[in-house]
Image (cartoon, rainbow, N blue to C red; front, side, top):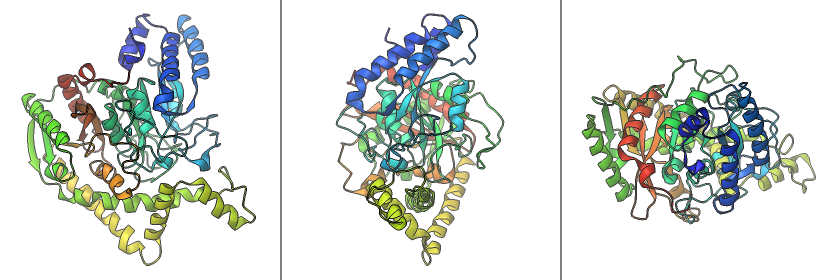
Length: 488
């Protein structure tokens, strides 16, 4: 039995039946990290020694009958923009290279309460700005399906670590597709929850009205399990919504007969790879066989989502990143000779090119004379996008689209053309703009053996419907049984 091949619910079952010890599982993942991390480069900080020590303590408590939490002893990986007490939280940026968080994010408090074992902090595009994890200040993460390809971004380290079996599951964050797009490119499951379902307290902000923490897992059941852990109202986050507590695992019945799925034709037009289209068309036919009603419709406002997203996101980023000034907890330039010098040189040397580009663009759209022309207009378009989705959900239970217009592209292929890189998020950004939940699951591979993802979008706080719709197709396709990365 290869322990690291197992899903979390399989690991949980073996722990309950005493077929495995917590120490067995943790040691297997620590060994896997030692073996594969030099090739994949998914981690920025590894906590393997601490993990072994925690596993021994938890196993001892388990044997004495003192252990609480039905997920106790399961390892996890954490994206490096989620504050973790006593551990570096760098956001993939030189400006936070030596920042050690003095507190835990709310999601980390929940994970610690469940006695999950943190294996380390995972690589990401700097401040979550990117679609390939090539914008990290420290390393470029590789896609386990093909080490010459990107894993997607910005949660590329999280997706690659799950795909390479270096962690059984991970937390990422999603501002414009940063969980779903890398999940698609790495052949794993990624969920962006409804805005407000999961606390953002302790998540280093990129764009506060768009950011959401969510799970990246091997299958849909694990995804529902991790959502059960992290969802819930938090008084420390003013945007957190107090909704009725749900058990998302119980929603996974697989019965979707009579469900209505809308397929927006705009998401299958120019720019979408033909093999991606073909794979999704086959999936749509499978849904019909399962008794689902499928109908094509128009969601034309989605054409404006990308422009609206980049105006809003960059405007919020220019405000949020103002705190990184070289004075408080960040990198300070050794060449500075005055206060003004500290600000200028610390930011010039500490931020990468993509972050600078977005700060400049965000400052521009917020500046006097341009605020009304760009930012205010983008917010109006945002309202129109929400209204269009609401109109669609009057008729359909779920909306189905590709997750990414292409499969994983080569490292360095799009770095010289920022606009081409931004188009990688064309299918995902509208979900964040509208504050909706979206899930990506793998539904096939292309002619090069690279994974293809399908996105399911749901109504606000209706995660159980998209999870069950994804679960039904996952059982039908059996992706994990048929396809694995060549990289072993």
